[in-house]
Image 1 (cartoon, one colour):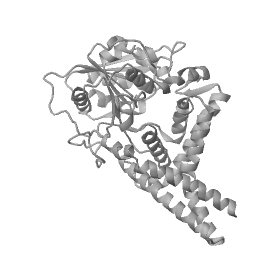
Image 2 (image 1 turned 180 degrees about the horizontal axis):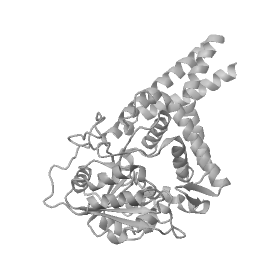
Image 3 (image 1 turned 90 degrees about the horizontal axis):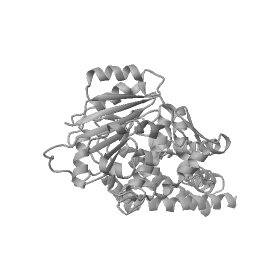
Length: 428
């Protein structure tokens, strides 16, 4: 079967070449430097530190810490809110207030908030009972409810499913002051779920490292910084200058949109991994993972079938089929031994070694359980399914559904240009 031999060898060879470029690239080696850890790691997030820390640490504390307003929207997060919102209220930072927006929750969020308010006087709870008006997405509308409370020099936006170490805001402010940043993003440690869920998160981590390596996106000249809604510490003057969240009111992927708007205006935006500072489980189980990822998958590709086809073929060729190439080569050498099949076997073996060694390194950096790297092809296949599901929702259901809200195809199409970084005319 020479056609099968040539096809397997050709695809495995292409995959081997591309993975070699990925693994030995400068950005891959330098990506690990962008990690900002606690000097004394906390007990609740105590794991082995991987990679080098961010080297230019703040060497001393300011004479007076600037006041910070922490804004956290939440919708039906009662199952984790005691731990997550509680951690926000127990930070050691000297001057801050917490504003939590209960975004039309139908669970026990209200009662948990009342309990926390009795213990923490610096916690304010806003009950948002109004659905987003036309042109607004749900999370952005919820955040907008806290506008009148943002009067401090800095404002921190975070998700209500994140657990914060008590010293996290202190460390963040040190980095902001030392680097003279306008917007700092911490990328959290994603706490483990089931094995397949971890494999999917490992796939997402690999994709982020390849599509948005921190050494590249942290350059001030790069138009598309990597900002994540889990943790965005803004200088309020910069936040005001770009029009606050109202300026990106219709964006489905609002965290990337606001970061790119800030970069387009010339503000200093910086992102670092921060597994000691912040942790959380993004999704609860495979069903929630599937629905959460497919919400943004197709819109993240600008609603383009061409880009979707390229993404699907890349995921298939470079991930799902990697162990299949080796299996076919082994069977070929058993039943049709030849020099050609031996060459294919060597290529496929080398590919699998590179693939799983790199997956092992990233798995360690992501602090996931040992052995998850061997499930990576399954995680890549699951990611393909989420993209296909996102395309299906886009064309069959006219948009996407998340947290009980429907986002129309027209809204997704309108917000797609975030990949090109908005250019506004506001002044600093």
